[in-house]
Length: 176
Image 1: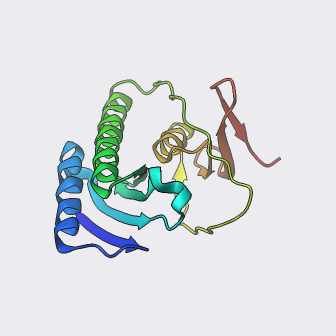
Image 2: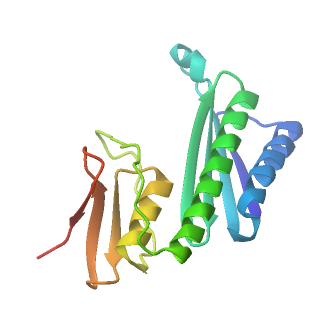
């Protein structure tokens, strides 16, 4: 497992870096053989109004061709790392169980996700789009914690968007 630790608006000591690596490795043991890479970004808020969320830790893990993203904020770096590593452990365990369940019974129901909203474009991402089934796209959407997911539908050979409706069910947008 490759682990990359970066600091933004914060200089990390060797002890903090090693502690971060230790916690990520510990969380990764849940699904060790499938975790390829984990990017860790640690930032410190410079706004004094956000003193209750001074440190923010973001984990982005590449796991079995999927992406798992975790964010946590706290007053201290140690508390933010604790929260983020616990969340990563839970997400990896959940992904592992869902992948195992999917192999056993192909009609597994998707779970609810937390909607993410933004008013302005603050980041642009580019990625390789591999063909996916609706089930794989739903799983990827849930693992990212997004309310929608843009993908290339392997069943229809078209680009599609799957999204979580307010009632918790799924919607699918396809071009005509």
